[in-house]
Image (cartoon, rainbow, N blue to C red; front, side, top):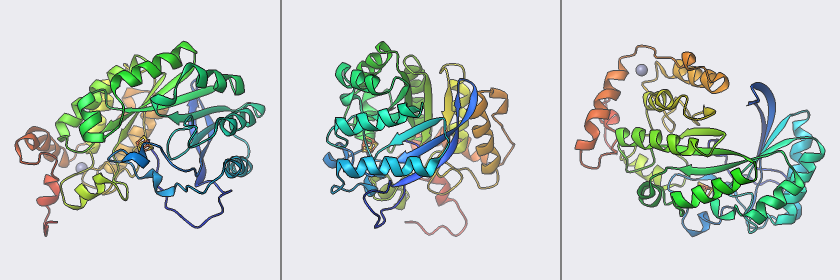
Length: 340
Ligand code: SF4
Ligand SMILES: [Zn+2]
């Protein structure tokens, strides 16, 4: 799920974890979208171990009540003012009744419908059922559901991400969403831990192709190193490097035309904890990724010449031959590098 990890603050439980506005492309037009991150009790899967890269549950709070969640949403809507679309995120699944009771979810969806707002929310596949979808549609017909598939490879899902579901689970949920005529956005993770750079690129290309069969939009999400995660422990020990921006470009270029809409907004892009290159070419590549996501025009994906591309190519060729294949080889070669 591509968003900044915010940090727990002592705030009223009636205030959402975060609220902001951004542009979103709907039917070819850029509209003002509101983003609301509700503070909830957190993802049920997180309470059973969680995904290796996920630190969103830092902001969850088990004392939050359903009434608090309704107030959080209402306060967010007041702050957002005029918008045409609202993304309602939690630290887990909007359809998980342990996190958001169904009456609360329906209230939020109806409040948005009363303002003629289309709603995007996220869920794990296990909460997507014909019943839950019917309840959603009865409250608001204009919804888009996001599923975090991450990888279409069951071994990557199990051993690298600890996702707790399989490709078949995603396929079932995606088919049920399609049967109801609901738009599906699928998140694809680029470079979960224990994959080399080359394996990660190949895994994301395959996953985008697979997810495109079911999705109205596919979002490529390069891993960013979030606090309190297994990925952070590996990264601190120089055993993990977030993906290169060259890898992001490579996946987008190869996947263009497969998905109806292919989007990417690398969280922490250009920084040490996010997808990055050498520091000199990062900004121009990030701008081109943004321009591509908004326009779907492959001509906008830039390829500035930069010396670091040769290093990336070497990493792509070599890092499978090095013990512990995901090590940050570039970090070891920097002047003054002292090791973990
Ligand atoms: S399912 Fe989503 S929210 Fe839950 S631990 Fe995994 S990435 Fe985080
Ligand atoms: Zn560079």
